[in-house]
Each structure stands twice: as C-alpha cells, then as structure tokens.
Image 1 (cartoon, rainbow, N blue to C red):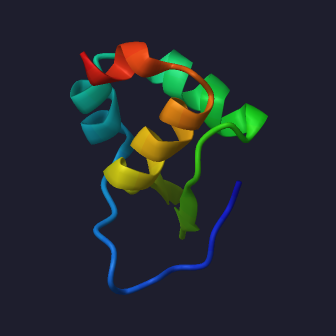
Image 2 (tube, rainbow, N blue to C red; image 1 turned 180 degrees about the vertical axis):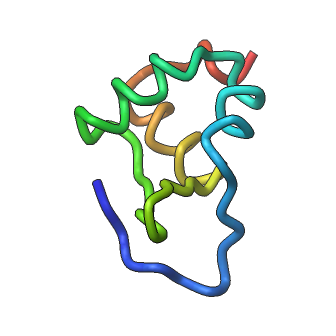
Length: 67
C-alpha cells in the first residue's frame, strides 16, 4: 500500500527493515508487492516506516516479528 510522503515520519531503506525484522530481502519484496506492508516510493527506491510495518505485521497476526 503506497502512502503519501509525510515529512514527520522517519523512512528507512529496505535493508534496514530486513535487518530489524530479521527477514530476507525477497520476503520484504514479496510483502511489498502483495500490499501487506506500507511503503513510499521515493524516486526509484522504496522507503518504509518501521513503526507502520510493525503495526501492519501485528494486524496480520505475524507476532513472530516482535521476538
């Protein structure tokens, strides 16, 4: 799900999201493509807000990401 760029939220690169949640880049890309996590397209790259990704995963029942 694409969102408009909000200057008040910290946006991080895909590698930071992968590191934080201990997932592979292919898993992150699959979740992005399916629309199950929020992201912002910024030029040719994608950025993510860790808190919003965490909330989306929690709502989907993926509590494993919090361990």
